[in-house]
Image (cartoon, rainbow, N blue to C red; front, top):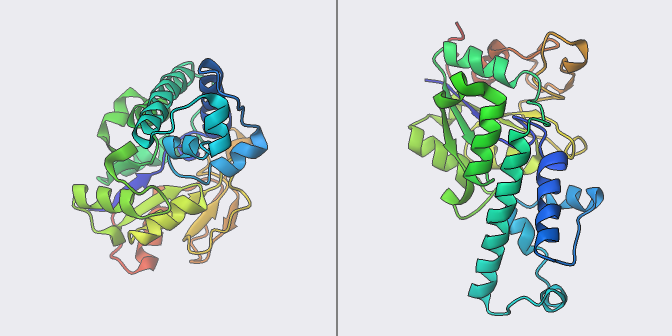
Length: 267
């Protein structure tokens, strides 16, 4: 059975700038921490997989001293975990507020895959509560229960390590050569490729200039027929799939065929 495995942030919804960055900075403010990440600074932070891991980049000796934080490693880890739990609460509240729309085409393509009998999953290094809130937003109450969710700390190493995709493939009993990952970042692409999956990329707010060599398809989004501004633009098509202005399931199935696996049904 073929599978479609989505990343979450930047793929299901473009959540980094107006969701995660906002939640990080509100958390820093609530805890009285002497830092606020600018948009440019956060563009670099998103290259670090995992929210707690991004927070840990703050923990230089000078920052620890200025913030009056404990120097004991275990106590410091607990402090970071406390920050991150609050950040997740703030973030899920932002998502529930409905200000961040799903990305074009994600529900349409997922619905098509579900109707064709494909396995659906999300593989993300974000906290599970955050991922499930975005999944519900993007897929709605009828389609989201058909997704398996692999998120947060179920693996120790975050993207670009292949662990989260390898974990999902193992738990679902998938042949990775019959699974398409939808990613938006180079780190995510490397994670999927490292686990043996085919990877299609939909670029997002912070990733448009990254190197996606190795992806089987790179588009601005999966696209939708209307309105016109939601249509996809092809940035790289090394396998000659030639999708139209909105990617359909047959385009993703063609990536699997070109990759060397048997062509899955799409109807």
